[in-house]
Image 1 (cartoon, helix red, strand yellow):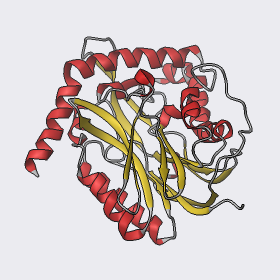
Image 2 (tube, helix red, strand yellow):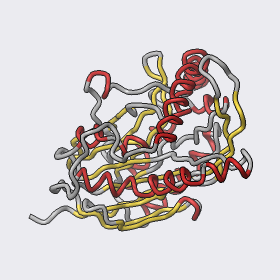
Image 3 (spheres, helix red, strand yellow):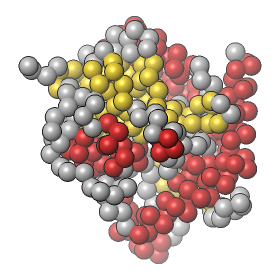
Image 4 (spheres, one colour):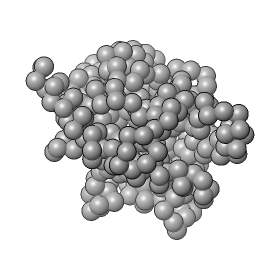
Length: 335
């Protein structure tokens, strides 16, 4: 039997940190454009309501469970007969999570909370239940068949492949992937040059490497533009240094063999990529590694990941959780 082929789109977005109104306005226009050009499956980025630098205004973008962004997804999915998905910061059960919403034309909403926050993302939310108890695997039965969802560094973990492989015919993913600082002086830029090159290649190749091990096509939506953040120095302290950087990677649609069907690098700016995608699981072309990470991450990147995780979790416990819950409550009461 021939595989079902669907016209797919992936959005590359330039949002404004903390500005839900501006970011959602831009996002809605791009979803409508993709639908009017024939897309029936549309991926939008991780943190689609606001980019997430380590800045206090990002807490203002935390939403309640039922919110304007999900309602926009529902409205556009029904109006244009599309399936659309992306993640956002949501307050639920006295915690903030990074929740992927996959919305079908009939109004059904499937959710998955990102398993582990990445680096300073820990300042804003806590991880989902997959590694805790095996729940929340992000594999859904939909009108298009089995659809799996994942966000950013979930794509470079073997556990993500294991929870989805053989169960989905396409993966909807989004990323928020930054690189090394460009404001720490020439000596630092030279010292971190090899890490920057590795990180850029890792971000650009992640969807293809994931698809080869999953045995299904992958839609990857991205942020683009520059990012000004703070870099926390120590757990239990708000001491930080300014961190100016840019988003890296590429918005892509790849087939199950990892071949790119459409690509837009982040340095090309906002835009949408399209491809006709055959849905369905196939035998993976690359065996899965017997370790936590798919790539063999260099020690410096592992150290950066662990240090920022610990510092970010400390901030979340001390300030981030309360700030996010307060913002979500304010939106509930204002409505």
